[in-house]
Length: 278
Image 1 (cartoon, one colour):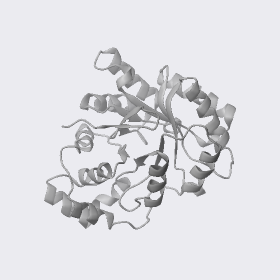
Image 2: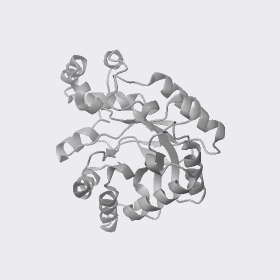
Image 3: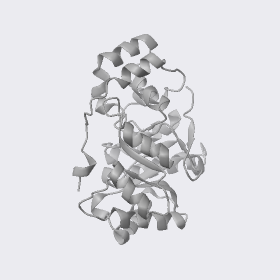
Image 4: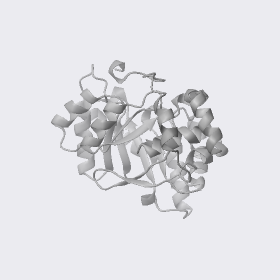
């Protein structure tokens, strides 16, 4: 299969457009599943403190590099600070904990997991990320689940523009306004739940395009994402599904097929509204 292209972040760091997501991957399964993903060609792995699997992710990465398959610098690992660790000092401690669990000297990308606007601490939290970034302990910093109003407030106060905003995004919820804001400010869009937790795959339009292209419904939707410039981090629990999710760079959707998927927009979420998470 064709390798995932690397996208350039606003500070020059490269990030693979397709990654392996580990949300809801149990701690005991993280090391073998991430090892399988790496062996298939994934070079971008997404985890978070909340997921409870950073140790397994780190173990798989270290085993893969120690075996000489690749150097650490060619891998891209993301983690995130959880809501209960918002605040400047708490975030610094949380980062140290995550780095220790991963067993790394540095992290490629560190995100604020949710803005938690009622806590009123995401500016202090981001200031801690800026400190870690200035110290070279993180190659890039960003946010997750930030709506436009959260980004606007952050950009007014920040000295470093977030490299990415990782948000729920799929054909039901294409986040057009937010993506336009990202493009205007040099922020990369990373899609979590890129398949709408699998529910989008049952849409007749998706099924029809899968038949037309000889691809699976998941490949069709993931291809829709990458043609729009999104980075995708789907989770998979089998080698076959992992390989399928990465094999999306050897075909293209026609403009008519893209338009058919665009018409699925309904505003339906499969996860929480960021303004309501605190």
